[in-house]
Image 1 (tube, rainbow, N blue to C red):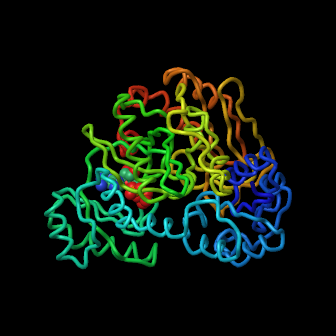
Image 2 (cartoon, rainbow, N blue to C red):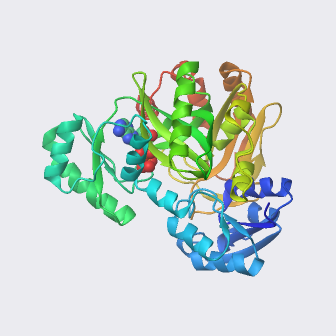
Length: 445
Ligand code: ADP
């Protein structure tokens, strides 16, 4: 195992990694910007290094400063957390070139999976069902029209380098295609510096179901079951649960195996997530995320596997540590993302937290870096806590989450706590008769 790990991140994910390291007897180094001097990840790490001013591009994305911090503190490995540099192949390569271990997939795997077209090709090669449509970038508007005709309308034009729903355009009929192609290309160019786009069929009213996988880097892989992340607003997940409320045991085993098959086929190393849309009883692969995900705790609660510990073990050469048939799933877990934002118009609400009382009691886990007196800076994303509950079954988990949300007291910044309680109380959520655009329809109604 490692002696010392540098965590190239902030917020709750930095704490999550520090906690796993501490339990394994590994020393930790936090990095931080000048806006985060008082932050909890800085307080809890054994050492900390300031890597730059508040703007992420000058600090949490400042590769030379982060590498120097690893050099100065003699950290043997770097955990990128999620977001920031976690899926930056160049960073992973630089870390390895500096003789340190990158706790994650290989630079080549990150680059390959970051290109959605390459990822679709890999999925196809591993016999996964993919969304109908081209698996080559379209070279211009004429090619886009041809690809759309082949996939069948409605279609989505998606950025090859996409992320966060940017560069995605839905087109319902051929007349609008040319214009949508121009918009998608320029959005992709602006957001990712790469204008290549592809066309795929728009799946109507899908659910979002994803599979957590672990790969040993040598063709061995297991899956830890699926998560249902169908409650989304503008492609951002808000509530995630495991298992999915709508799958039969056979479908669950089938989709889990698809995830593990893809990981195995590319010799995937570390923790990853294979994402699918699910509609009409069919799964459609959309992408694989080469990192830890925000919603990993729901999987940890139902599988009993510590995913961050597994990342550390795999990166240090210790392998996955267990076999597929040793994993036992137990009960139901739900996560609610708590964002510092206006519950009505969703604009960020940074500021100082003047009162903070997190919930507790049986089956409640709070992954958060905030505390009474903490500053929520305006520079980073607005996620301030993840409230995760575990219970014997879904109704009990919903009841427990509602109880825990009711206990949660946060003043000084506005949060989406009231919205989360309203969603939990809605018939559509309780029956789980939802799709990825349900929340937007429901909010508008
Ligand atoms: P990004 O990486 O930009 O987040 P994804 O490919 O992961 O893009 O898709 C994000 C979300 O967009 C999905 O969860 C789903 O809601 C929607 N989406 C993506 N592809 C399709 C599709 N072919 N049909 C319908 N919805 C889609």
